[in-house]
Length: 333
Image (cartoon, rainbow, N blue to C red; front, side, top):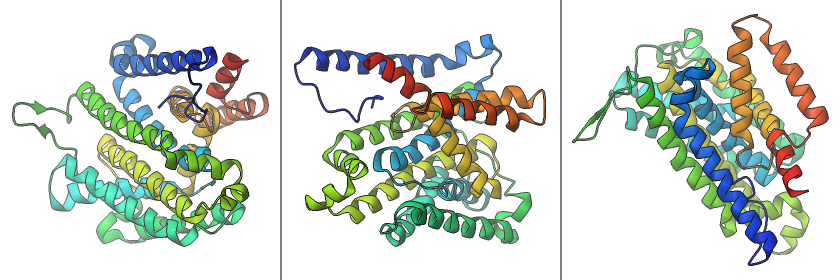
């Protein structure tokens, strides 16, 4: 699950052993930072909810990067499945039952089913056609959420629900009032999803996705069913991002059409590029940079997008591999 999952194993060679140690060091550093975040965030002017937001959007960006970075299919409409995860969770909590696990499951199912169906329809498209079709479907879902006032609340959003505490039998986790407990709950879900994502990328299926990304024509000559693999990758990416959407609904206790809008898709792409596309942990770093800049600059000026855009332009011009991609390239040099 490290940033070097796309590299071939190094065997017993000194270079392979060095890469293995670097992967372990990367994992230790990432999880040490995430596990201790509630302790050091207040010391640097942050707060626990900010760390939770980074985790949720970082997971969403990593889900998008699963498709874009490791399969090579660019989607500008992935906010559709994130937003469906948001609404799936919110609708269950609002109209059915106050169950946090059931809400997350509903968001996963709604976003995953939509991604499965749409992925099957667009798996044969390539390049700009694939990207534009993803935007078109996203706009359909946005329009439905915006206009269906009786169910979704329309422009005003879906209100009147809140995340419910978790009753484990032997204990109760207070995720309603205790922000630290909710952070670790989100971190637990994040860890599970990231572990699954990493194992998939290390599997033969994941290696096949990399082969398709690098040279689709050669992969087709080898007898690989390209469309089926792209469809499965799109489906998995939709499921992962729908889970992030469900967590986002729990974080805000609110669902609105902006979670389905093109702006969010663009923000997720920016996070991937900032941290480094094709680097496993890159989108998480990109999400951290984006969310922190947004939180800090927006507290001083309403024109925060101007400054964030400036940072994005600098990264694209001088660090085209992204921040983590740049560090990785220097390390391997």
